[in-house]
Length: 147
Image 1 (cartoon, rainbow, N blue to C red):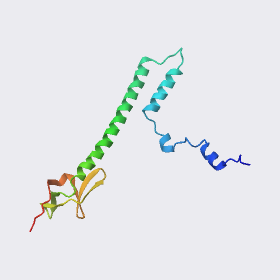
Image 2: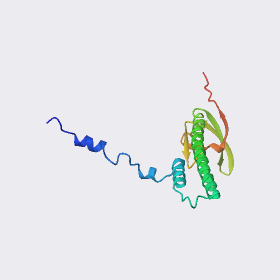
Image 3: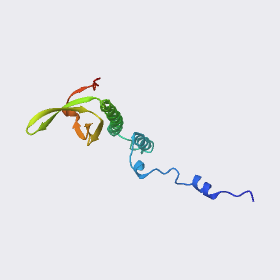
Image 4: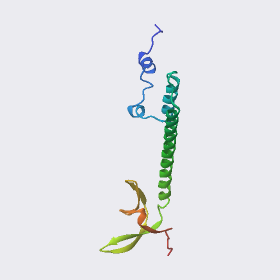
């Protein structure tokens, strides 16, 4: 009776659902999928009515545009990450900014204790205040006075 098989383990390892991707991954087509479709179309085309040159050129242009947009997306993601790092470098520094108070513009200053990203805009956190990066007029190292 040593020929028993653990059916729980066997069922999980031999399941047809092991290679199934979530719906979100299935519904998005990338440049590799587009290239597979193009190759399949070319290999299965009717020999008596081959793909016209202009149609083939249009499909290749579409493929090229898709690849460029994918690369541009990756570059924007990388740039966004770098921007966050640049803003994080200001933490611990003293900034000055312009703020409207009672009808006049006042210069305020404080030490940045954090950064915030809200709706695509960056803000420096000074105490409980969120200062838009665009309002900052000066940035400097904090000075500690010894007594």
